[in-house]
Length: 460
Image 1 (tube, rainbow, N blue to C red):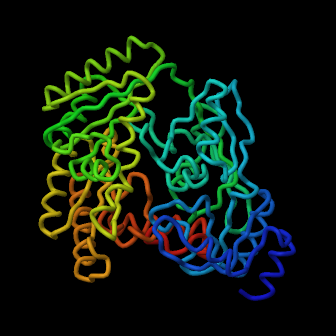
Image 2: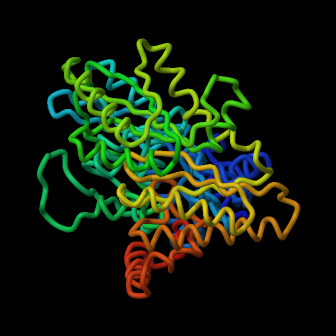
Image 3: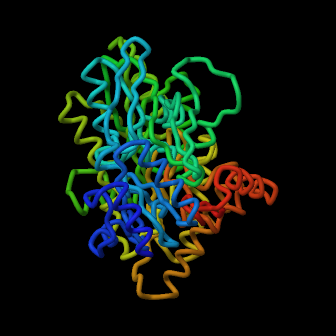
């Protein structure tokens, strides 16, 4: 980076907040994809005025700028693939600014950790439901930029369902406010809705107002064991149709069950075709008992050979252990994991899993599947045994592409949680028409005419 740029950023932020040394560039060069792209600098803005000044300068000098939360994304959304500046929020802009009990909202900065917010509002008897698997370290700004989901999405929805208002900075340094702290707001375009899931390509979010709800008083957990994946998938949407809306409805297929058992020895039924784990919650305990009776009935009608209800927190944690540790366990199947988060309508789950099995056989790969079937979101993991073998890697990528095509044909989407970033950018034309892709590009141009914000992400 030119010395004049370094001098400007250092003068603006002081040396403690502007770094151009090799150590910082390396530390901010990767995310959960494990791909590496070195930025030219790492900046830690102290407040909104810093963000405005940085963006204005970068816009005038055509310097790419990438907003970054915790760097926990699976699609390369926060990688500096063209160099430029990483704008990191974890050092200063990480606070809970307000918890408004009367209006049941929280106001946070983008670097606020998801779990920190959950704990703070639950201490006051309130509840922020979105719970991505990375909740212990992922930031709210990153959650908004990717529209993160989680295990509670089946009942409570995802991040977009809780964003009431945003403050954001445009590339020219101007501040925009999107949304209000009101339940109803139909004035003007839904700019907040456009910024959510935009992966930092349109503006830099500096403040987020989130809806809170009352914390449920009771929660219960159950697990059903099925002889086949198809039976389990049928039980998912039939449970919803029976009038029960579980907080979570998670599943593991046989490959996933066997991997967890081999790695952790938890006594799981390794001969099972699939297991379903369900949570229910509410304010009346008798209502939860009734919900579980309905779930058990539906599960049994759809081939469940066993049904277990956790008696206490220890048993609950035991049941959830398999799901929480599934991702790391399936690494026993290969040295390269091609992890995708496809989503289809719930009624299409049986067909989706059946077709994924056919793809696995076609390309000679194993594809453990698990995920959030309560909302149709399946984590498919194409496992390549030897990542140094080009033929195996090629077959893995061919399997992924075919799975994407199947998903779209079933009315589904390329991503339910992780976003597009660079990993799925090439597949965008599978899911969107030329007219739709052109519209996306025109929206990008309207917000960011010089293309400095997270360039070349999402296929834009």
